[in-house]
Length: 296
Figure 1 (cartoon, one colour):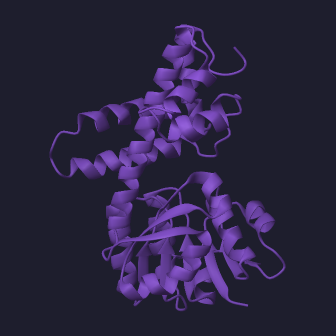
Figure 2 (tube, helix red, strand yellow):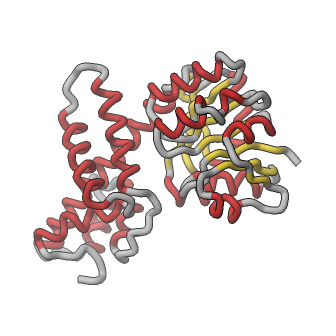
């Protein structure tokens, strides 16, 4: 049975790792949440105490980490990947930004280890179904070696040969998603305050030019029923938006919409923290004393 490493089994990483496991790969896993990692593993899996221990055991390691700082610790920390002697390829499914990806790639290359920048989009639902988009950037050899595994996780798209380009595309994608979610929340709250039925509003939006991923998926799935269980923390959602703004700031040109969206999600993250990002609608409902959903 093929062995692959996986570091970071949070809300999205858990389900991507599970898909690899269900495809017949024995996992060697490290995560700070030991109980969650144990729940993931079948009888063929192995839980180890460090990133180095993972990379000492297998030739290919997948990462799904929450922040650039977490990536730096996993790669260059005292028990990190750069200190290992086994792994030949690191496939980074995290969203950490171009600078962090390029730094990790350079550090690993100096140790003779290849790095594929391969962030994913599709959230927990996509990770469960194996439909996430994978934006892969790296050498031909790295992409070809990772491809069979990436096809198990989702839909790989080669976006370039330089690590960091996958990150750039992922950040821009998440910026558009965040803009749609914030704008849709405002439109839905304003419509309900005007006396419109939210289900009818979504029906019209989705049959018209206002259709986006918030109207077609996030609101029907997690807002109208007031479950707010889409599966992604507001703080991490803002982290992605702010990484995109930081990336765009490097061009030294104005991006006024991006700046406004970053401020909206900065406020939401301060209010909501680790709560689901779809709860942003509640922040807009309160001043108008309305509820978008069946609980009106």
